[in-house]
Image 1: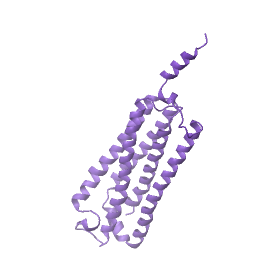
Image 2: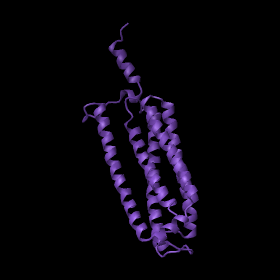
Image 3: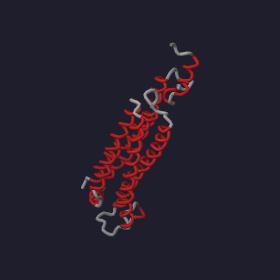
Image 4: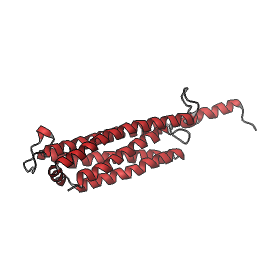
Length: 228
C-alpha cells in the first residue's frame, strides 16, 4: 500500500534531527553549506598557524642568539613528561578522526564514545602539564622575566628561555581548554541526535581544530624538550 502524504509527514517529523536538517537560507543546499563551512574553518586555522609561526620564528632567533640559555633551560625539562603528553595527543587525534567517521556512518554510540575519549585525553594532557610540570617549575622559581628566581642558572638570559617556554606552552594549553569546551558542546548535541551522515559539519570542524592543536605540540615537544 502506498504511503499517504500524512504518513510521510509523520515519518519525517519522527526522524532524528540530522535527517531533518536543512541548510541555511543563504546556501543552495547542504553540500554548498558544507563546503562553505569547511573553507571557513580552514581560514580560521590559517590564522592559528600564523600565530604559532610567530612563536617559532621568535624561538629560532632567540636560540641562535642565546644557545647556552636554551640548552640549559631545555635540560631542566623532563622529556618523559613531554613524551607522555605527545602520546596522549596523538591518540586523541585518532579518536577525533574516528568520531567524524562514526558520524558519517551513523554510529551514534561510537560518535559519543570517541568525543568523550578525546575530551578526557585533553583533560589528561592538562593534568600532566599543570600538575607534573607547571607546579614544580613554579615552586623552583623557573619563571619568565622578572619572576625568575632559580638559583642555578648558567646564563643571564635564561629568564628569556622560560618566558618563551611558558608563553608557547601556555598558549597551546589554552587551545586545549577551548577544544575541551567544544567537545562538551559536541557531546550534548550528539545526545540530541544532531549529527549523522547528512549533517556532521561541526564534528569535522572541531576535529580539524584539534588536529592543529596536536600538530603544534608535535613541533613544541622536540623544540623545547629535546634540544639538549
